[in-house]
Length: 93
Image 1 (cartoon, helix red, strand yellow):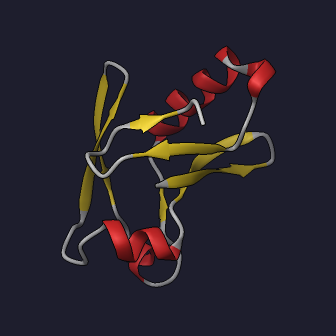
Image 2 (image 1 turned 120 degrees about the horizontal axis):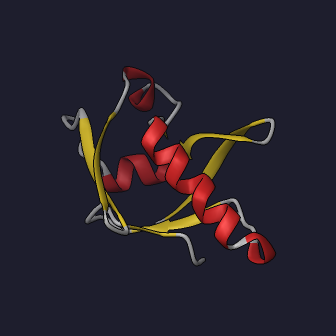
């Protein structure tokens, strides 16, 4: 699935999963997901808003990782990332 990096100004604030992806890839009973980001493994909670029309993942560690990837790939900057249902995220879309 392709998800979008969410910004507030120039600061990364999370990932926008999208309503279609939320319905397709996330069981409704799930309250948290585990992400494998390079060598970093984090668990991110899914807020009630995730299921109420605002399917976004917010976590300070996730945001720092996304920002670091943006700096490394500044010449190929994009606000989309590829995520697999296993929880891994690939910034090279």
